[in-house]
Amino acid sequence: LPRSQFLPFFAQRPASTVVMEACGSAHYWGRRIQQLGHKVLLLPPHHVHPYVRRNKTDRTDAKGILEASRNEDIRPVPVKTLAQQVLTSLHRLRSGWMAERTARINSLRGLLRELGVFIPVGARQVVPAVWALIEDADSEFPDALRPLFAEACHEIRDIEARIKQVERQLEAMAQQLPVVAHLLTIPGIGLLTATALFAFIGDIHRFPSGRHLASWLGLTPREYSSGLKRRLGGISKRGDGYLRMLLIHGARSVLLHARTQQPDHLRQWAHTIAKTHVHNKAAVAVANKVARIVWAVWSRL
Image 1 (cartoon, rainbow, N blue to C red):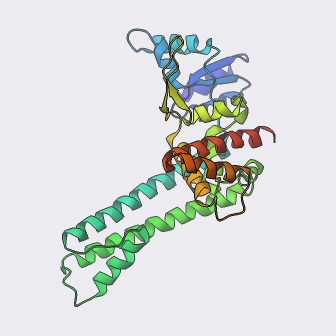
Image 2 (image 1 turned 30 degrees about the horizontal axis):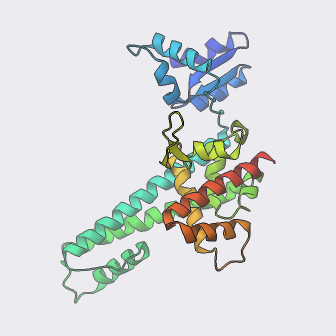
Image 3 (image 1 turned 45 degrees about the vertical axis):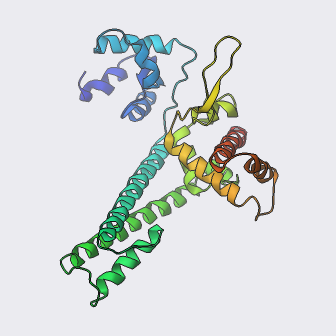
């Protein structure tokens, strides 16, 4: 079917179950097909791939999707609402601009280091130091580089303005979402983490327990066991790396303020873990705990 005939085809069919892979534009088509009265199941592509036998064709893909849908252990992906997809787009844009800003700053810092100019540690130190160097007429900074470095500083400031605009938009949308307001009450959960959890997870009831959520985020140990021997390694790092990164950064904040702020059960537990484990392991353990708290708070709303 060409794309123009895709929805008319389903509009002429009786209500049924439509199974698709959760790939690009799947959530859009899922919403449109649901509006026509059908039930939509989105399956994770990496779980469907083992069911595709021999060569990859449309026929074998369809058979693989059908076989994967019969496996009860493969949990479908909830169809995202338009608000959730807007939030995911804002987060993706911000993440990309943050990476671009870091690249620009590192480039300026590295080029200046080759000229014998060393800037103190910290992203906020770079642009003021470069501007001071450009405006100093008595410095030995080459005149040919002054306008180009000034343009690079303008680019960094422009990127920072876009990032602040995205954060303001996230804050405005968060005020309209009761789930985000409840998640913000959890230690270690800020605006970015709360909105990202709501956008990327979708329906919290897809996870039977908090441990399932932590496992989906890749915060539980990787297991390689057989018989009576149980081997647990480091965290699996499966799932969405962006959510895992936000939770671990939030956990580091909890560890940092465990002593200074008024202690609660979570901070007392984090402080105890920090005494017996290295900082990174303690941060991951706190992130795991916070993920389970997120499930408990969200699932009871």
